Length: 168
Image 1 (spheres, rainbow, N blue to C red):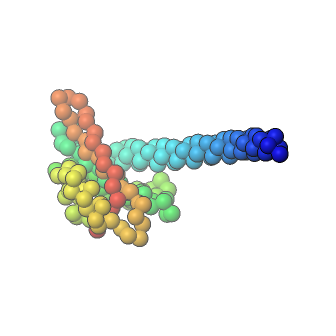
Image 2 (image 1 turned 90 degrees about the vertical axis):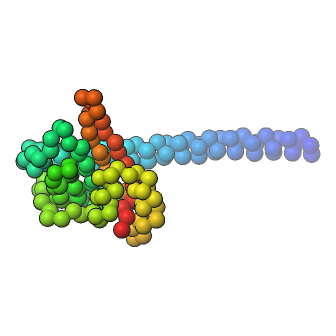
């Protein structure tokens, strides 16, 4: 009886280890695939942002930008419609646009709230995060916008970035 119980225990442990390893291997593979998919999507969006800025430069929309100015960029993707909304500004001028299917459309007003633009212009990251956590869009709480501040410091270009949930 004791020998039978020991054998049953050993077989149970062996089955657990075999099936447990197979399950862990699957989960590990699935996790890697998910991360790979996310990474591919991130690169695709980043390249798209970069390509849009190249188009804006080539078409002369950003000719007002001077290397002595601090440059601010604010962008948001609407994934279902595959539309990118953006604002690019210095202390002299602001350019607002949407981009969809290789077409840039200049907008007369920013696609973002005035408070958001003001806080980004001040680069008040503490207040941006606070507003983002309090007054975010309840209908789409996972949506994220990205802002950049680009400036020259001792002849080197510096780039600051903040990602946050858009706020009302």
